[in-house]
Image (cartoon, rainbow, N blue to C red):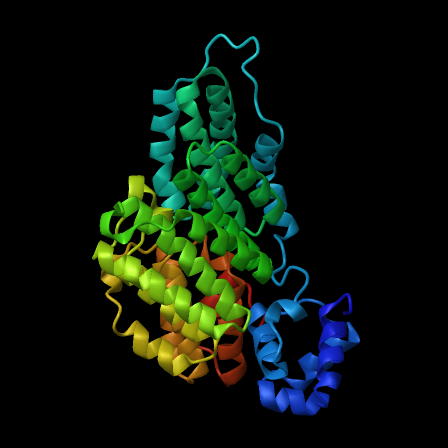
Length: 392
């Protein structure tokens, strides 16, 4: 096997007896992009593109994609979050400290910060997180009851680092949280985010295997499962499905989604364990992921059909569910040449999460395709292009 996407692509293409032009025609990926990948002038490609090529070549996506398929944070983002990374890398100590933090005090501060996490208010989080992390470090050292608070904060920080594409810092935060987990459910909630981190890095096999392992370990007896157990198991199955569909394993993706649906049916509603918005799970959440899978396999018609039936008004507009779903809908509109509707979805996301949307490469790709197809741009398109960072 070669050491780059381009080398592996050329190797498999030749083994299948396809020219570059034939591969482009069968996969829907542009000939120029295939040439750039094989020549090594482009070394980074979206997971969606890699999946199309892998599907045509009848190999797993992970066979083609060995390194991260999504670039890390840019220099400005890295600089902005440097104090948070330092707080993770250099835990605070209680030695010689007279005024140690209390469980009640740190928990109250974390509760007060929850709207910032839910609303993707990155600027405010960047200001308060370093101190909150230091206080949680000290708390866990001086008070055993503070360990759960520190684990929760590390889980949220890891999730935030994934959001902002700081994958090394995310891995550190999540490893620390997993090491301190008090039980398998708390550990599984950390692993859920770890699987998402692996997915964003294009490590599909690792993500699938980790999710399968923990789903097997946490599978509840349905007749007496608690809502929290169902949420935990259901989310791990959704990660299995997400990794499988991206890795050209449609059967495994369907099976995992079917099992997740069975857990959601038992719940009968959207449930949020321990006020943890990252683990909100139920029938609507499964429907969102089914729609996402349809987008991954390039079925925009299916995406729009499924989206029309999802009661999204029951979900808060967080990046973890509803806003991410709107990107799938916007993508489907763009692919079906309903450009005004695509821009409308992007505008709605921007209104809900003005700091989150500019960090989404997916959004830039969607708007970029819209702009390429339009002879003239509306004022909304021009404003969004500036916000998201699409060159015109």
